[in-house]
Image (cartoon, rainbow, N blue to C red; front, side, top):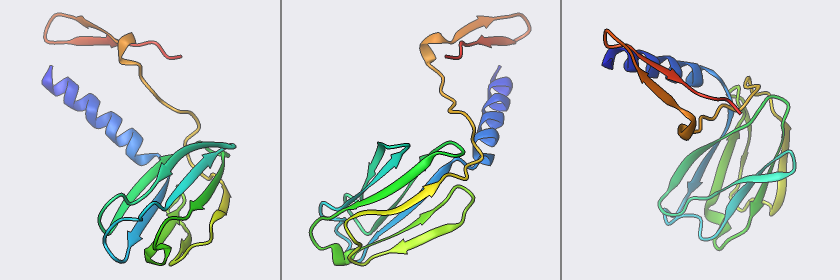
Amino acid sequence: MKKIFTLFTLFLTYSFASAQCGYVIEMQDSWGDGWNGASIDISVNGSIVSNVTVSAGSGDTVSVDVLSGDAVDFSFNSGSYDNEVTFTIIDPTGTTLGSFGPSPATGSFLTHTSNSTCNTHFAVNTQLITVVPMVCMLVVVYWEMH
């Protein structure tokens, strides 16, 4: 059973890792004390889906998954000491769309049509998973997609 689970896990890891679904935001703070209230809103198709910041330290990297063709907008929210704030936005194919700061302009600074290779969101509600023990150390897993 452990081998089957490991094989299944490796398959899922490879499948999701090979898909290029997300924008990467590499954020830095030159003073090393976080962004002091500054943040970036990421909107997809007109709705804010994430607000990212460096809460402490000199940097952080986050990824926001999107679908192919989504309209993605990045908006900077000012904080204290914006002169310490820099960041880079990388699209799902690995192309750098821009490096911003220090002292980035407040408001919307980048709009991009997603070139993600992902066409559907995949989420599993674990309450809908049924595990059925079988003979010979085989386990069958069923789930419902909604």
